[in-house]
Length: 487
Image 1 (tube, rainbow, N blue to C red):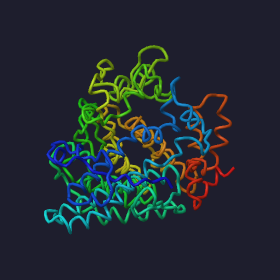
Image 2 (image 1 turned 180 degrees about the vertical axis):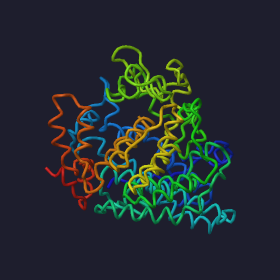
Image 3 (image 1 turned 180 degrees about the horizontal axis):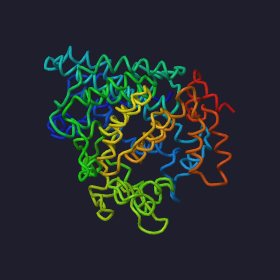
Image 4 (image 1 turned 90 degrees about the horizontal axis):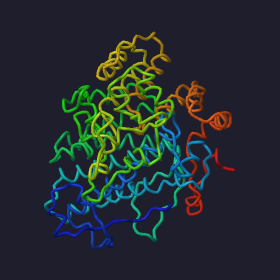
């Protein structure tokens, strides 16, 4: 497996004195013997893990949206990405490369092994600081594995650091469910060591692992595993924290500009001044011609099709002309369809991983699956009231609630890397009883010439996951290709 030991050091006399927390990222390489001397070294590697994860914002968008029904590729869409959207997937596709996730995991493993040893050297490194850094490493490693399991299903579970470029860990795949068992234990054991809101700055409280971030990830994993009681329990911990709330209707767009709102639980931070630039403006702006709202997105957000709602046209999407729409969340500065970001602001918007509306809808879904329909409906209509749209009345049916919540998540969380995983969760539930509904939703977004072929490919749930990259199979002989792609 291609996992390089990228442990690294920064210019001590300059960066230790900086005020921006994400400046504490090691930019160049040194050998292990010259590293792991102080708590600042530990923090630098943690920051390296955050930055490496943030660099995947485009991948998180693609993995979460590309195969679903709310985005469509334009003329500049990369060929490999177009093939994924068409389920024309082969192991030579660059999107099958999981290397970036394992770089994050390697950073975290290094911290987990070496931070306790640093404390033996640095007598200013307190137990409180050590446990805080370890909790962040467990959180980021767990988040990486949760993405990997949802994207690839079964992957190697690596819990030790790579020592050098000459030391490779060639491990077979571990079943995805066993990986989730492991990370749930890690998260539950280390959640109490995370801070509630004790980082020095707002950016850190929104951009580093807090108790609420742990709870959101645990709720998400629980819902993915259909452990509804656990999902509710984790969400209720966040609800008990007065630091989080739904942003008022008139301030909803502050989620995306400038970001770090009261609704935000965890988001990857970007700052062009530190050469940390997001990709989303470049993917979704008018003349990028990469990704646009699909017909389905235009249908639920466009003024000519839907009631004008705050999170619709001019907020989630923008219309320039007939058949000329863009995704507005990452381009605009306000929900007016007019004020676009410029200069520094174009590449400094954050990538939201979890926010309060998301976890409330997780709870509504869990409640409805437990037949607690009235409680689920209260949450659903709370989200709708914030968007200034009428409340729903629904029959007391699990399927009716599943459909309504899935639709509400599409409205609220469009283009935020959630949709494909939401559809997979529906398709997997109750022994794939609604697999046909997933196929119907996705095929509806496909060109007429591809509908039958796409439906056939999606009929096998193993095809919902990605193959292992061909270079990984060549490098690691312990790996076996995902069965669907074992041609």
